[in-house]
Amino acid sequence: MKKTKVIAKMAGLLLGAALIVSGCGQKSSTDSQTKKSDEKVYKIGVTQITDHPSLDNCREGFIEGLKNEGYVDGENADIEFKSAQNDMSLATQIAQNFASARKDLVCGISTPSAQALYSVCLEKKIPVIFNAISDPVAAKLAKSETEAIPGISGVSDRLPVEDQLKLIRELLPEAKKIGILYTTSEDNSVSTLKTYKELAGKYGFEIVEKGIGTEAEISQAIDVILNEVDCISNLTDNTVVNNLALLVQKANDKNIPVFGSEEEQVKNGCLASAGLDYFALGVQAGEMAAHVLGGEKIENIPYETMKDTKFTLNTTAAEKFGVPTDGEIAAKADKVK
Image 1 (cartoon, rainbow, N blue to C red):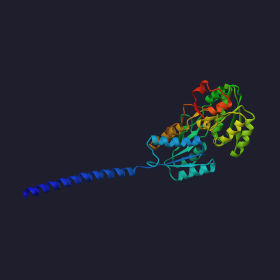
Image 2: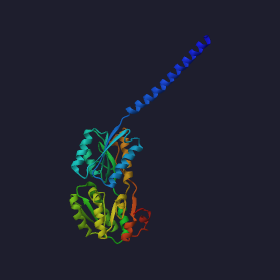
Image 3: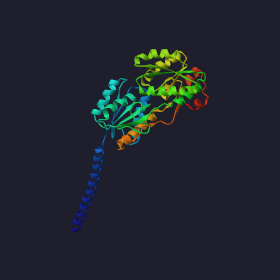
Image 4: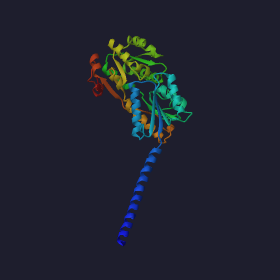
């Protein structure tokens, strides 16, 4: 009998110990869940002036760059995207909505979107990351290449104009006049056109420019400029890129090659490009944004540029125009159809 009581007592002690251990384990699990639910979710606004493949690639790269640094949409980041549909009044409205929502950080893809964001977010101390801006200084979004201004920094898509001129000369050895269509109100385009004019003579070219004020003018502008040039070199001008299919169609009808400014334009019918990888550009901006969310002061981060030129050649267009594809630059270009 006494032995039975001892055994029962020992069993009770063991059961109690097991419950205590079990209870501790449950508490640890609950604490972990609480900690996870208490983790800050960063509100991030992303906007671009219009929808086309280059800017879309920037946006996708931006989200990927954030993810690379541990900021994952749907987990510890809440990323809201809005397109301005090539409407400046809508771009301003989007910026105001992001500011009112007290986003932790916003990203403007294209000069107009970044300018709209900065105009309303600076006062509210919401950091702005820009992307796909050719000349941040001309757009008044940076003080210099090495010095940022308060509240904003980002990644520039400054085009490798000299590489483009070398490419055109290799593929079209007899060409003399390069046509450039651009929107007169877009700082990116005005700045890049200036660079073309400065460098064209070095490669035996003359630049023929045609500026437009609105999208409604582009069809007539294309018809006019195609009568004056040997080829077209397309910029990253958002209005023109929106109408790239029309430009390529009209140029093909007149047997005039169009050179793009990045791979997506070449995939969509341009002959070739010495340009940028816009997804990689977006990744670079996303990683910069992550540093800002992590506590780095944005005014201490000068804007960055892409350092490597990406050459792309459309083999179908090359065959149509009978251009050589065995030259030094063409031989190392990525080939698309």
